[in-house]
Amino acid sequence: MMIEMRDDDWETPDDIRDLRQPEHLLVWALRAIAVGHADCPAVRQAFNAACGASGDMVRMGYFLLVRQIGVTGRRRLKLHMPGCVCLSPDERSIVAVVAAAQDAVRTGDETRLRAHLRWLTEGEPPQSVLNVAREVASAFQDNGHRLPLRMSAPPPEHTGFTLH
Image (cartoon, rainbow, N blue to C red; front, side, top):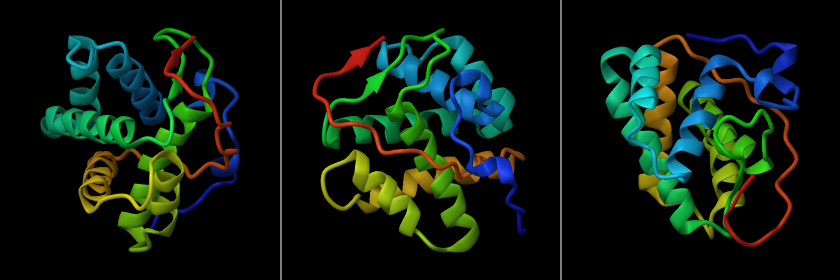
C-alpha cells in the first residue's frame, strides 16, 4: 500500500496543537513515561483506542523504545511537563523516530530511521531498538495512523534531564 506524501508532511510543528492525533499520543505518552506514569489508565485507554486489540502491546513497545533511547542516549532528553502545549526538539525527535520507522516499513530503507536513532543515542542503534521501533510504527500504520515525516532541526546539545 503506497501512501502519498503531502506538503504539510514537511512542516515542523510549533507546538502540540499542530500535531496529528498519533503524534500527539506519542508525545503525551512520552511525557507520562518520563514522570513515571507509563501505566496511567488514560494512556492505556488512548493506545487501545488508537490501536485496538494491540493497544497494550503497542504501548509497551513504545515504552521499551523510549526507555532504550533514554538508557543509550547521547545526553539526557529535554521534555515538557504533561499538559504543556510546547514541544521540545527531543519530543519532536522521538516522534520522528516512529515516523521514520513507519517509512522504513513502507519502503524497506532504514537510512532515515538509523539516522534519527544515531542522533539520540550513542553509536549504531542495536537491532532490538530498530525492531521495536518498526513494530510500534507498523501497529500505528495497520490501524490507519500515518505519521508524517517532518523536517526538524536536531536538538541542541545539553546535559541533564529536564521537564518544563
